[in-house]
Image (cartoon, rainbow, N blue to C red; front, side, top):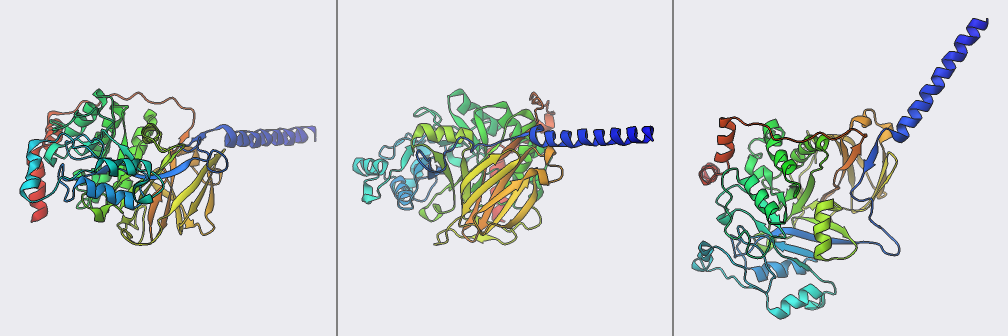
Length: 446
């Protein structure tokens, strides 16, 4: 009997240790790092939610409409900040003509204007007095899509470049990295634009999950700390319908090295009709250039698109979204809060919420009451997640959070470039070349 009692007591003791261990694991085995943790959402000192695009065009490169027309359209649609990023042209204030390559004078030959804002119009927009709007639109200068005349697939946006620096830039061998390095060396920051266009993922959706493509693009971001991510939404997503999947794959590649991949959304507008397509909402104390740069780097913003192709067999949506230039309200997060292993989101104008972790949908359901709490302790295998992110959907579009990363205390890997074969180097150089662009356009035309 004594032995029996001893065994029972021992088992109970071990069970108690197990319960305590499990409880301790739930509290201390990992932490959730959120880019939204410092935001004051309500009450005194609440931060503002500012709508903007950092990638637009004018007739100073290849757009169909002049700078004055484009800027006025953004202003009329309620944008709070804007960067004009013409191809190979570093942006300046909207009441000034930027330096641009001589060949862009073809716009005159085909009858296009290159009109800029008057000084009075510019002053009115940056103060909010133009047309009595009541709030300003911040001009972000120094932006450049670094592929002059769009002659290469080097679609990288450099930001905060010194005036005139980057004008005429065409890339070169491995044009993606050349553009990122150029921006880095000149004190700017960058992101990769609409990678699905370069990958031709419309014709081959599997390209966004190809390990070579993931390693190539993520490797550039890991190599240069001034490059922060990719566009996950671009214009009407005509060439970027699968780039959210690429984003997840790049996150899973990069996070073990201690770096996240930020997902940007931009109109890439070449005409007024595409101003209401994809954009971002920055959470900032004040709408100014300093805070815009900081938010681009820390990810305290949400990315929205008004158009998205159906993709029900992967991460959705099941039905295509086509809401640009309509009165349909787009969904928006109004709060993201972390408490231990729980993440609570508040949203408005949203019908459906889904959570993505490691590239898979771990929850999908209605968010009719505008709030939902994800408790990772109730999800099997959550301790192995690298990140989670939320998406809200309605007829008016889709809005996504940035990745909330999972820190389990493990030391980050040290990144080192992989040695590439001569064939791999040749392929990278060729796919960055003018000849490759011409071949692609011929195939598209056929």
